[in-house]
Image 1 (cartoon, rainbow, N blue to C red):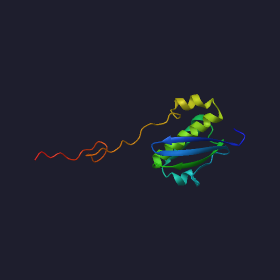
Image 2 (image 1 turned 180 degrees about the horizontal axis):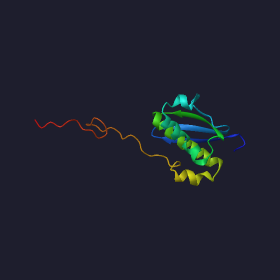
Image 3 (image 1 turned 180 degrees about the vertical axis):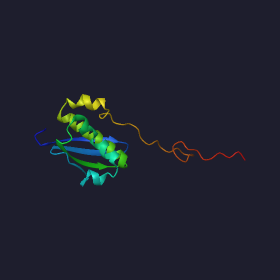
Image 4 (image 1 turned 60 degrees about the vertical axis):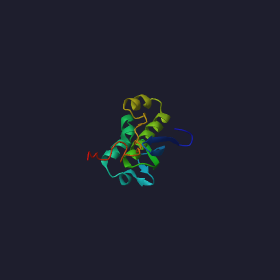
Length: 131
């Protein structure tokens, strides 16, 4: 850990941006001032957020403080996961290989495609009528 007792990192997914602060502690995760279980309703999102800590075996060694904004719940969970993985690499370079193997350090580039004029959505065209 650094001299200031915590490590910071940023994670991104879709339009969500998460700022992570990793402190030594007992494994508590606080998202925007609320416990993670209260912030994220679905258990799948809990698992996604905690995946970097489980893979590295540090789930009960660090407390995680998160400020996340933008996007929806799924994008925010992905952004938090990405940020935690980056913070863990800053703590110990040895984690990089394991996190990379599980694809946790790669920023997911998939974004919503923009709507085109003359169409209803990005690719959905209005119904064609012959007569």
